[in-house]
Length: 145
Image 1: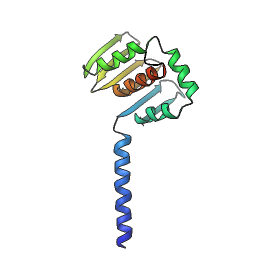
Image 2 (image 1 turned 60 degrees about the vertical axis):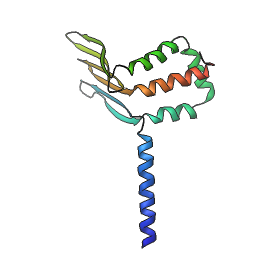
Image 3 (image 1 turned 90 degrees about the horizontal axis):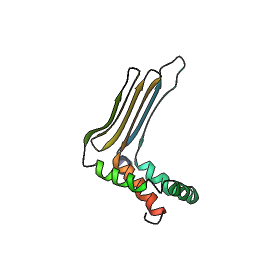
């Protein structure tokens, strides 16, 4: 009986450490709701560490192609992601019209994009650290832009 208890404790501790690591970089959240009959409703959350893992297991040719296609904007993305961390809570863009509202802001180290309109709503939240990790990987593939 003592052996089973030790195994359960070891398994629980391993699961707790794995969960803490998986969510250590934060969570990417995407919510999409269409405001019409039969409209789609998509809501998913995923750990931001999945993005880094995905970049490591993606085919090298596909990653190199993406790096080439983003080569011109990478310096701006890198600097933007790095500098946005200095503004923990700032509204970057806000547009309000009678039928829609768009807001792009930083919120506690995350980039938040909210779009509300008559057709539906879209909300995306992504850690700035994830954006910086992606730009670093793209620059690495481009030979250090």
